[in-house]
Image (cartoon, rainbow, N blue to C red):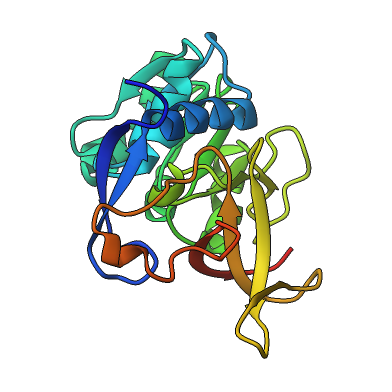
Length: 245
């Protein structure tokens, strides 16, 4: 296979809630894996505890392919991930046992973990914990960092971008409510529809449609009809999210 051959079909509600199949190419996946590894500063020294669902790009790409592309270790936290209550209950024991450096989970899992006492477990190996998949409430983030003393970073992506749009910088300032910096070799722009029906760039701080393009962005859904209105005329993917730069 080459970079443009389809590697996987991922089911998604995507930008509209209508069930669709996303065609991810080998090139999309390889670039996203490398890109996320750069953002997370992953190496062969890392041990990732992965509790994301495996039918979701969070499991397969955000912590899956990214750590494997860096020759890191991947610990799968049961077939059910954090939906297995025993995994959540024992999460800090697992961190200490495997000397985990990276841990990731959706915001609901992060909320559940923050209610589990560390009870003297050694968490010193953890470089950071990452979350994504939905909006992270500020109160949950604050409680988690207070309980663990470990930095919590946010990552923004979707099935159509193989998870990789932007990430809170691991070594930089963490601003709650921000999804950080764009992934390498990709472009994020905020658009609005002008009076003539064309897409125009929003001013800094102005809320509009988040659009993205780059080597990790898919070229279209399996069903051609689903591609109608999915891209701007210049080829940027319209995420369906609102945001500002």
